[in-house]
Image 1 (spheres, one colour):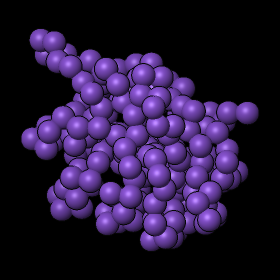
Image 2 (spheres, helix red, strand yellow):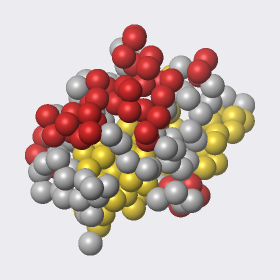
Image 3 (cartoon, one colour):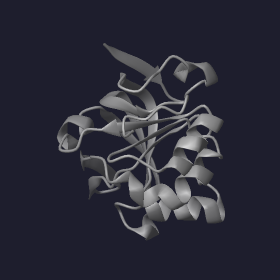
Image 4 (tube, helix red, strand yellow):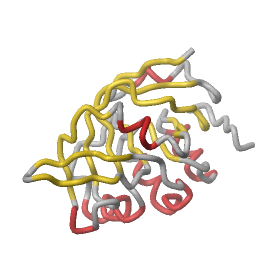
Length: 173
C-alpha cells in the first residue's frame, strides 16, 4: 500500500514510516545536486527548505518563450551529496530522495532530525515527470540546468521507497 505524504512535511507525518514502505508526495519538491548542496551551505538556501523534500535529480527541461517545460526528471546517485547532505538536513528538509543510498553520517542526521531517505526508481524519469504539475521557480541557473534548484509542484509523485528511516534503519544493511 502506498502512503501519501503532503509537502511541506509536518513533524509527525514521518513517524510511522519504516524501511520498505512505498510513498508518494503531493506539494512541492526541490531538485538539488552536489553543486546546489555546496552552495546552500555556503550562501544559504534561496528557497525555504524547512519541511522540504529534496530530490537528487538533474531534470531535462526545455524553455519556450519565458516558460519552462519538464521533459524528464529521474534520480541521480545520492552518494555524490554525502559531503554536504548531513549539514543540509540540519537546515530542515525532512525527505531526501535519490538513488543508491547514502553514508552513515547521513543516517545519523536523518535520525537526529526525524527525516528519511527515499529511493526513486532509476529509469522512471518519464513516469515521475507525469506527476509534475508545474515548475514554480528556478534558482541558481548559473550552475547549469541540471545543477539548478527547481521548485516543482507535484501530485502523487512516486512511487518512492523508504530506504533509510528516521529510526536509523537502512535497506542497505
